[in-house]
Image 1 (tube, one colour):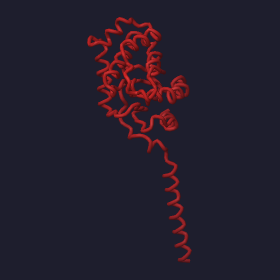
Image 2: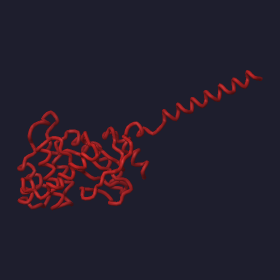
Image 3: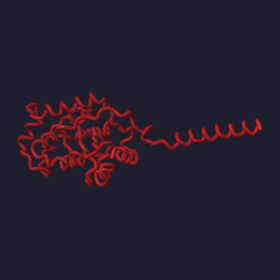
Image 4: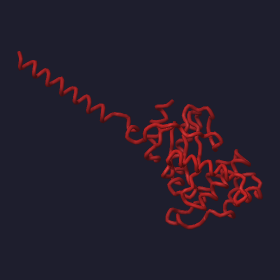
Length: 220
């Protein structure tokens, strides 16, 4: 009888251990794929697409000179837009990052000028700037110029081109907006681009669309 009790006890322990292993192996992957949830970045005044009061807010910290940002915009963003932004479940905002120096600043100034002057055309301009980015092997070549940005704005927006040129100079009226973005980058300890934040959670791998959908669905 005593031996039977010991066998039963051992069996229960084994079952408990198996249960623990199963839980660990099947825990939500986003626990390992994302940083700890923090305070979500303020998006007031930032270019935003989607329903304003959508239950989930996705923010991209991006740099127009960043090849990975271009790749993310071409591969992940279209799926995010179709599945969640266009369906009213997610709002998407963009914040400028200035990791690549003067060209990053110039492109950011242009984007802010367009957003102030012709907000409805912002996302067309935004995409066109990334489309103008050369192949990654030419990443270090200078391509962000006043002339190029002016050409893109003329093709995609109805902004006052002279005002745009002024905003790309030392007399810029939107420099404060770019400085504000830079402050948000530092405040949120953004070190890589693109950095994607979903309701206060920073994704470790912004190209993992399955992780993105899990986080979104968890908050819906």
